[in-house]
Image (cartoon, rainbow, N blue to C red; front, top):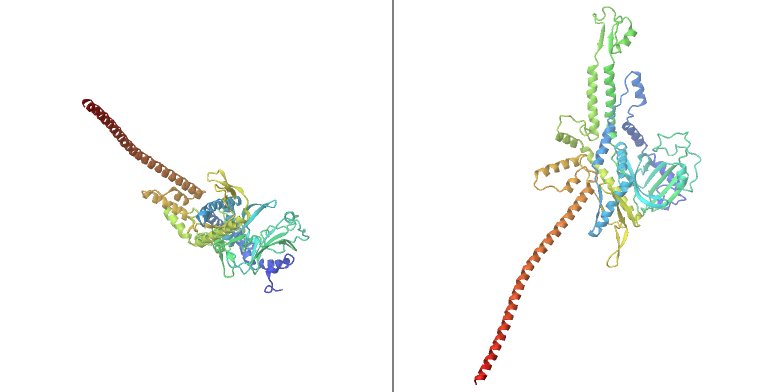
Length: 591
């Protein structure tokens, strides 16, 4: 059956091996030229910059084999500076009700990154991409005794990853299959898959091309089969995972994560017209080779002497060859040879200086092709101002903008798949350990059931929903952009009467855990604002009470006056009645 007639969805565990071996043979061969080039680029990075033929030729002519590696510090400085300016990833809820869950997932993602040493793994991925053109990150659930423990991130050596030849997209949306092939000790494979049958032939050349290709030794006494994890998508969009080795299927499962996304994220710096990836080192090769060769040539010209002499100029020609090669040598000439001009020593200094000038130009080209300059490496002139140095650094980094933006997208994809796995695996109630900016530990409960006052149950820090968006800052326009913005903010701070809030300044600084510190300050400021508001409300209530007290006193006075008037009225009426009685009595007596 041809590939056009094959329905991938009909492949079963019993029929998969034939297709897997055919796919793997194809996917490991189409980019073999790139893999060989990537091997050369890594050798240049590690300082292996002369071929065997070149070394033999130099030794034959007595020329020094000199290596001045400018590629490694250039690549390392980009990796280090990118890490210092690496944007933070956080989660945002889609509704007000989702904010608490989003904050919990942000803390959970920080926890996953800490446990996985994701920053270190990202550095490895970036290093592979800058040198070879492609780096990989693997997102997976870690199991312990068959039970889920945590989601992990780990970088994968580019030499152990193989993909569909027709895939051209960095996000792998057009990729039909991916293989991760790693040589593994046979006892480990047996422990992972008890049904594994030990290999009889451990020939390492089968499916050649791996991270162990340069370190394999045929006389080794350890059997190491190549354990291959193949993920493929069928015509209906369903994902299948198959783990296999030579001649046997060890694991076969359709739709392992209930989706059609690969658990791998690739970071590609650039591709050529043949769809082959490449990084920064490719363009630096010629300039680096020129630096080494011109330096070696210049040293040779300065150390070697070319002598033009007539046949009878020396008393002993062989002895003259020895003494002329020494800086303190004494050469005996024939009588009158020097005065007659029979000996002429050619000055190679102008040629050496020319090579040195061209070498310096090539050195600057290496840095320029990497998107940096000497100032970025701390090699700027001591007479340059800091402002001019920063401007020089910024101008040289424009070539890095696309690369930094692609890395931002790759990190976003890592977070997307990680948070896709969270509701699948973090389903039980547990405590997540967090590390505060001060280095102390704290614990966050997740998926905890809580009984509310209305007898309903609510899950605290619920991780079982997908109602969040992943937020990541824009990629910086340069590796020192954040420092420039921070310096500008400090300058503005000194020129304005209204100070810039501390949490804003922190977010543009290079302080570790600056976002957490800024959030803490923001929360403290919010609490202080609430306290101030409460204090103001208390003062207002006190004023109202005082005002009510005056009104009450006034009313009390009025009541007293009325009561007094009423009492006086009663007394007057009583007195009138007594007077009337007395008057009546008097009148009665008179009559």
